[in-house]
Structures are given as structure tokens and as C-alpha cells.
Image (cartoon, rainbow, N blue to C red; front, top):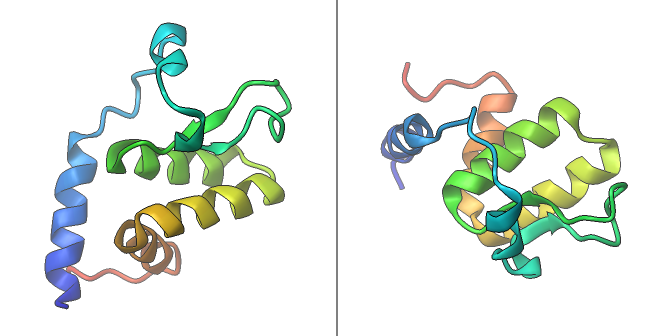
Length: 103
């Protein structure tokens, strides 16, 4: 697998993400509980957190938990994203370590 191609595809997907948009309460209720990395029981708020139902949401969950998550939340989100989207998670790890596939 050519990592440059994977990375380019990943970057294209990320550009499509609107990070500033928020999930409405009504839209959140339509997401199945299995598509959240943090269940309602695990959450401090009593509501599920970090939706990962598609690659766009999974990429956003990785970014948000990296910024704001506790160590246990990070572990859970990383585990769930890795299980569901292994290529996305691998790219995320490489870029977190300072690697750049474009060079």
C-alpha cells in the first residue's frame, strides 16, 4: 500500500469536514449508540460522546479527544476508531508523531 496515496486521500477527506459545525440534539438522537466511542454510562454528562458513525465523524472525534479528552477517553476513542477505521487511525498516529507523507 502506497502511504502517499493513502495520506492524500485522507487529506482530501479532511478538507470536506466542517469542523465548526455542531451535531444538533435531534441528529444526535438518531445515531445508534454503537456509533459513539464513549457510551452514556462512560460519559461524565450521561450522554454518549464522540460520534464515529462515518470517517468524517471519526476524524473529528480523534481531533476533539486529542484536544479535550481525558486519558481514559483518549484510550477509548483511539481503540474504537482503530477497530472501525484502521487506515484513518494509522494516518492519525503517524501525523501525531510528526511524520509527513507529502515530503
